[in-house]
Image (cartoon, rainbow, N blue to C red):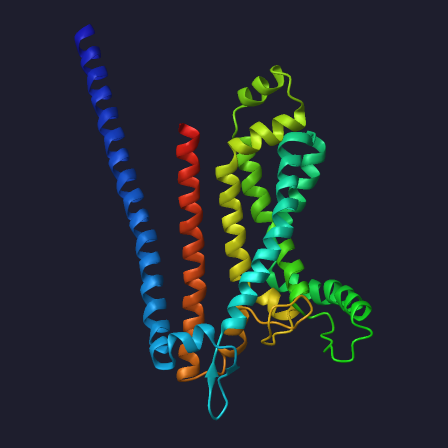
Length: 317
């Protein structure tokens, strides 16, 4: 009587092993397909941007497009210089990062290291709500709240300057403030997750050696989480560079040198503003602007990934 029962157990074990192997093979196939889909998507976007944006570089001239300062695509003798547009995107993104990242990092440290459970339960949903607000709503809030304040500041600073062209608060400074607010949830969420993933033993060891809690946070926990924090900053840069709808409402949308109180236009707002009616060479140049924006984001990702790898090798040594 015992032999049949053992045989049944053996068959059930063999069956379970076969089921597990089928599940594992199926899961591996699904993972591989998903990975290839992601790779194909990136390659397709890259090829399409080069195919659509590169021809205008040769028709107009690379130097004329990238280093020209006059944008007059509908003139009798059209000009397609986008230097001021490029500089505006670089300066605006850099200033937004300088303002937003310290605030976001301090908020992430507060949520992961300092705040008690009840307080964190209030602040964290507020941060997540920021991430869910549509871009156009940020733009409308910028028009109603940021632009009037900046306009008052502008009038105070340039009240005795008859040559200053007032923008009504729609200028680079307003765009920077709106961008700084928009990148907060991205950087906060990723930084907090990275800080929470640091082993508790690191903190305990630092405190046991006599370090204060603040010293432990900034000399142990934050350096240990720097990879995730930098990833959050990279995504924040991508959000700032790629934002269009909110910025087009608060930046003034004129092509000027990127000074704080100048009405400006970024790479994304240039595409949004004119793609609806552009045709021919004008439309091709707008795709070239998209190619430049795409190249910026790729270069930033590659550079920061290289920095992270070098930092990781130093830490290992």
